[in-house]
Length: 300
Image (cartoon, rainbow, N blue to C red; front, top):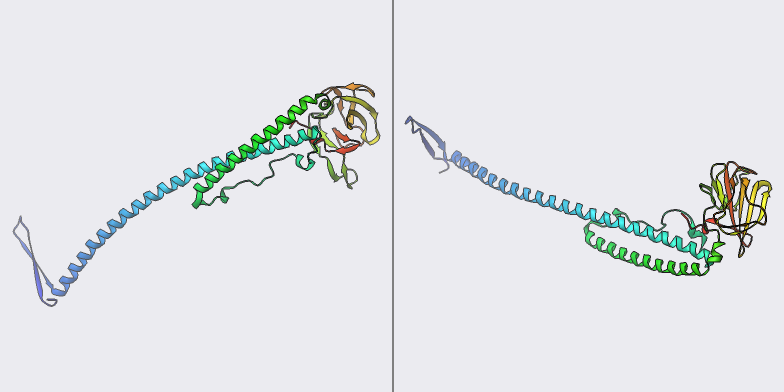
């Protein structure tokens, strides 16, 4: 069969003409095989095309689903960070209240700044376990909310104590003595004059010359005059072993022996004594020992 000759006749219905095609058997087989292969290829290609389109649709749906989950997770992380900041703020305020009532909070925990705890990051969340991660975050948020509630209860107890000891607390320096910004904190530093590392006994609060200085608590003025490197300065005894000092002032508005109340205008910011520019040097002393004034200031 492979070596026989075959003829194919093609008729034209309109003209009645006829065309004849002659094939050897082998060529006929090759032609039929080619036609069959083309038909089969088109069928398989069509099936592959349909499957590809279906997979593309599934991929788009999956990507949209993942994007939705990421948006929800980002929202949860934002809520989590907000709660962490709230807890840190409440605990800082709690520590300051404890200082005021004599409970001895650690000064190391009173530095200004953000929450020290480690923050979450999207890279920490395994993408293949996002639902589990979301549930864990929800659980952690609930725990944080409970911590906030507990801290608020502690503060209520402290506030009750403060009401019962209002007179003593009125003599505790708990407000800023002047409006300005801190140019040097309490603690060890290099002296701006000698470069030698030494204890800075208070806060330097930079402000314009003439800015009013207010007493941060009630007390009695025990010093009000020039004091060498401190320039024009004031010292107020608040009782219970607590006193405050104010240095480099431009004007003094109170005299030795005078009683002052919290918020009273006692003087003005200046640049007298050994100073590099207008500012208030503010000290809090407990039994004559310099203490970090930020431990007593309740205002942020």
